Image (tube, rainbow, N blue to C red):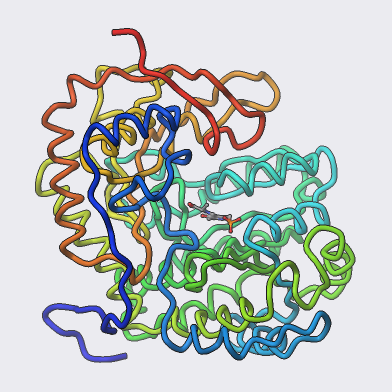
Length: 462
Ligand code: F0G
């Protein structure tokens, strides 16, 4: 590790730029109406600062771009596959690798391989795509995250922790044989990008080992989680992020990865496992859904860029600047008195829409309405993470009413500057000042799966 400086700066300089264009309020009003008040349905040409997601939106390095040129496009046995396999083994410690087109491809494979109808899959809060694949395989997700994770005001440092008593109760109720694995995410996206501590993970490992239950690790943002451990968990300040990441992975049996986040690529993911028979089964399935097991839906160049991106993602200077930028925006909003999820998470700042718009009931979709209003104000694109994302209860058909009703300002890696963050903070403050005028929405179209992506809305009658 490098010595601490008083202030961090990005450990890179900018070699290529992509112009951004301001739009008028009239254009934005038309665009958001045409998009059914859903920021997923906006055209990016109509967006000024795009904080929809950190997924696939990172800037690649000169080395990654050079790697694209070196990609081996062989259908079978690509050199780039073996490069990626070597990096996954050395950096994460998982023995077997199956590339997939992105994270949900891996979620589909692991769910089909391990879940039988009637199984229960405990997890440290749900993630949208992860849960859907568990349900499609006949399983039921059970939330075992600590209660603090559901409280945007709790300052608990490790809101991604598993509540061991909840896990034990679940095992007692259903029996270990009905629990194929614990689905464990580093960090927890839906809680606001919150980390799990190493101490807690070690305890989860001990408990699951005693019952013969696997841990499948959603390692989408594992480097960011490791950085939070380095920063806040006693006894780890002297360790590198790379070392902590390796230990986290060693406490689990396999992993799904959306490489579009931590690993700094625009597309890609993988399934990793230490179990020979799980690998064998997943390798049979991948050819049906993704492609041959040595490319899994990716071009050789994508695997090459991913292998290089994984190495870059574990650099302490990189991760300090990446998360530091998120903290910069978060701290600015906290100072301005805006209700946000605290502590600030690692991949974005999450506005607490219930506290922002206390006059709106949850079925007026406050977070969806707030995201639309931010776009209208400045062309800033954010994402709803509340009742729309939570979907419906698969048994009763009713809306799920999550405790957290959030708008996520997600920061792509290595893309925007501090000045962009200032513009974002100013826009949020303007909207906060006129929050009482925000009316809420009603849904006019609802897709069956993952409705938040394509649902449409209109303003509630005033
Ligand atoms: N797990 C987590 C924790 C994620 O955040 C995501 C994606 C996935 C799995 C699925 O991966 O998109 O590559 O198929 N999150 C994106 C987001 C979509 O915006 O948070 P994917």
